[in-house]
Length: 598
Image 1: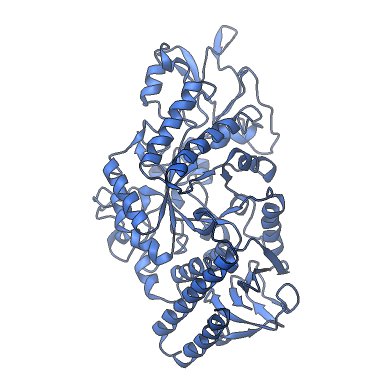
Image 2: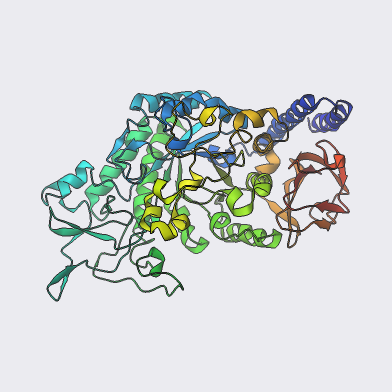
């Protein structure tokens, strides 16, 4: 089998060369080579005993922000039916798992993260039947469904909070309440804790005549997880969605789940320069972040999900959101969850090159607990897009990085197209985080620019909606940057992404080992795979200058390699897919990347 696979791989590039005038044929043949290699590789992989990898280790996870994905009813806001109508898009991209940001019933003060009913769908997005249909249709396409799970807080319109306002009965202590403290006859909050969105984390209730704590906006009171009834009721919410066929959860704001029992303790100054006293970063959050009690609650969720795995044999997935270094985030592996690694989102600037990227990646690998699996991400609904942080010209090479590293990659919607951010005036700003910082600073904090509607085609509103006014403006460059246009162009960001997502299923890219090769101020390169799975050299120029290097030494240990994928910004035919390239003196310009079969 191995010999046959090698012969087929050798013949295809000659076919490509003979048909180089026919670009569409070239593209189809290249895709066929990749798919055949992956299929053949899987057979080898099975022989090696690696068929037991859970689905979330082999899948690319694609984050959908429902408001901005696809509108099916013409109200200018994306919805569940819209997602269903585009499920074939994920098959085209070879995406095997989708993650839905909140779609629950909500007053939308924080666009769905202020939930007033955890077990229903907001009418803006559809109905529970729509959700059930989404799960059914996704599963029929072998696509897993992950949902946003928001346990830390809820809307002040939630029945639990409305009952808690009365100060009696079961829900009396479902939230953090305090009389506060008196100073010179004036009532004050019990401590100096700050809201993540700025200002005091305490709000006075005229109804109950006490303060309640909110880690985010005042319409999002925090639940009291020291109350066992809260723990069990949230477990029941999880069971509700497991019963509906959900495959995994992404846990929002996990680090805020507990606060110190003594709420009269102030948090110390961070002493960070140029941070005003009302801004969250003004304090060091020793009483309100990553408290050890979180572990038992997460283990409880894992136990609930294990109940369902025992019933049907399908593994369930928990990933948690926290922006912390390995020493903190890796504790969550012990709790039964995978933590997001945001090092490629938070720690890297536009001037970061090969050495800088290797340091960030090695920080994950070197600190990973034995037997655990890493998780990489380049962006999300709370952070600036890749095109904004690293430049439009770097989108393809950044996707190459994300999809060829070991670990589970998560792609934020639109990054496969290289979507750019929109400009939103303060008067049109929707995001409460931006609004809270006023006209002078809103652009520093508003998340609206990265949440614009997905660009489907060149028609009005880019095919996102039939409404004349979507909830956020469509990027004005949509006529040339959209799914329809890029599908037809073999060297588009979309089709490069598709090729990478397909290649990632080859056993060489499932293997746990990454061997760094040439690394300098510009170049990051590494070898994936073994002699049994096939070996690939991935090399990328992530810097700002051209770089020429010799790759023939270990770990590549080869004189040449065959181009499998390139970022298509090469003007030289010698780098065309299928070509054999000498590794003794390989030059890459900024933003260029190659995957070479050794």
